[in-house]
Length: 149
Image 1 (spheres, rainbow, N blue to C red):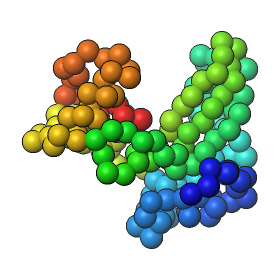
Image 2: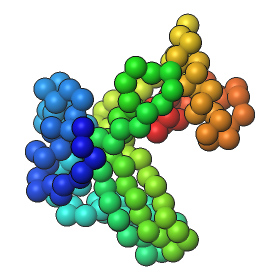
Image 3: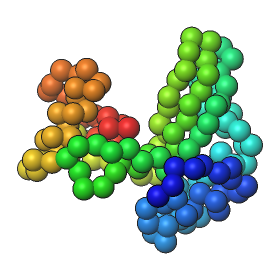
Image 4: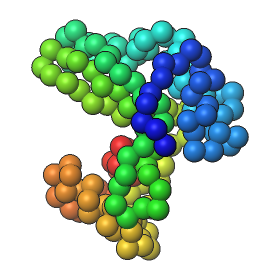
């Protein structure tokens, strides 16, 4: 697959990037709601902009890539984040992974995710811990999706 990114014109342009478009592209659901929020804002949505400005003066969006894929060890497929954003801030460049949610949780808790963990899951968790500099054990109440994003 090519790594050439093209500008979007509408939320519909995001649909083809989904791993399972027919399953995930529905009115009122996360993938479509996130696309609509960002496209209709014509830039950074107000809530995200306010959050950034509260911590980084002059934050400017450099690029936003929907359905950004990241290879992580221990899995069969790449991990797909809803939106990867790169911002220029007063203190440097800031990378942000955004997960859109309507009414669902951020996946299972770490405690649920590691129950009878396969060798692949153990490898992935060990890798994430090393990269983030987190000493194990990580609290089981943390949502796995927030940790690996």
